[in-house]
Length: 258
Image (cartoon, rainbow, N blue to C red):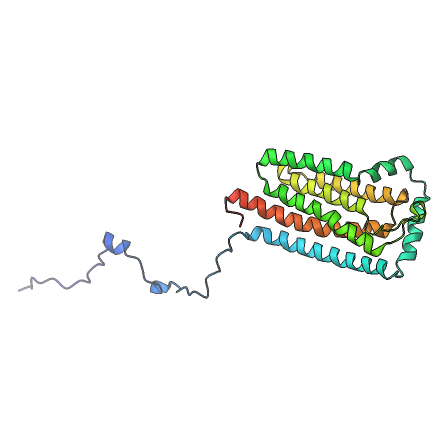
């Protein structure tokens, strides 16, 4: 008589909602176990990685400019071998065929009576457009550092000026060059987020090159006076760019500026 008992079959896996929803422990089914040492470090608040190349570039640029400024200042203080060729170059530019009218016009752009109103108008416009006052404060502090640094250096080094300025002394570094470079450079930094164009930066470079050339052509400064002021201005503008970038990010993220 055939047996009524059925052969035993393997029981199917019972998958219930509770089984599916149950989380798998680390290491189950080949899942790698993450350790604290393998996890990437969390981003530092207030220092987004997108700004790290910018800050590194500013530090490098400011470092190079500071080294050049230190070397030029040492040459002026020690009456070094760079000064005779500098004076020959200055005399050649002063007696060249460069028109005196345009040269005087661009040299006047370094006057505080011209550069400061331009900067003030830019500050007012940017503050009105962005409603942020921290970038304006950084620009004001940077501009105030120009006479605070240039005047003592001029008095200490007492470099004689070109023949048209004799017998006066105190021409290194050039105050007109630093005023123009910092004032118009700050305008570019402030307008960068508003206009979003590079034309202002290119225009600033051209204007400052014309200011320096005009000052040498008119016999107000030697070329090294202008070059030293450009180096000093790069250092100041690099610090201003860093401060303005941080203040804008703080204002946009709503974090307190402590």
